[in-house]
Length: 368
Image (cartoon, rainbow, N blue to C red):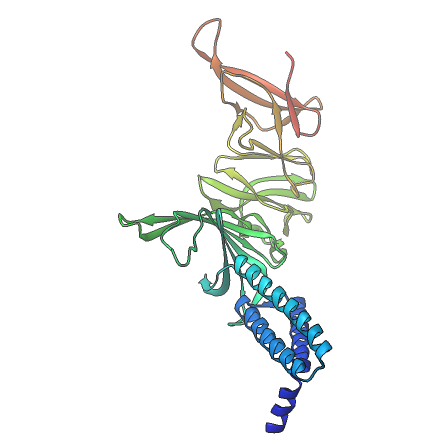
């Protein structure tokens, strides 16, 4: 043991260099595994290497000629200067780290607080290791503080969750309720976006007819198309999708890539195996703030929001009276508008007929 210690003591620079190379290799291997060392551990290793470098340099200077001492001293001073500059840069760019638990899982939280307070959460792999990929991102809004050291400052936070490929799977807003002393006593939360509600997983592609509530059904020979209810959502709305049977109703399969949100009073129709419509709530808002009519041209696989070309400064919306239909090979939809009767005074319901020449994507008012 003493012999090995003396061997290391007499060749500090060599073993310090070996340790540095090993540290670089470990960083590279961990990077391939989407893992890295935590900041405090990196700083500790760099300090250890710097001390080893200083001791090794002094050792070489003692055993070197005068000229070599000057060269080594200059190089050592330069490297020491660069090391001090690097420490200053580290200090300026240092972001506080915290080990936190969210939904029963540990994360390493890194706080970035300048004009906006942002927190990035990474997988926790113990006291010295953490993940590379961001799993959760929290936006606390304007400020310059650490929300973990000052938990009662924020009034709300928007939290974004990511899957393994970096895609957003959920966005949740948390509003904090505070007492008269400014201490958080309760939290209200709601999902702005939740991919589990809008995405159908591959494992769920097969479905028995009785597994989903049928809202509408249309048969074309042996092919049956259904609009089915997937789930309830806020605001008296529901999520729906399209199911398809090619064996006269014995088996049904999911067709839709994603669900669409409509009201509980929604109406549906398929005019053929490919062309179908979903009327969300019976209203066409003229400012295009909401989707009023969904159209599919591929049997329910994808849906597009239909566009209505109509202007009327007297009203905010018009009403859909009937589902789209064919009239002598012309695709039409009957609507109405409740507006002022300029001739008789008062209000009246005026019928509007719209025609589409592109399979329901765009609707124009039919000429009288």
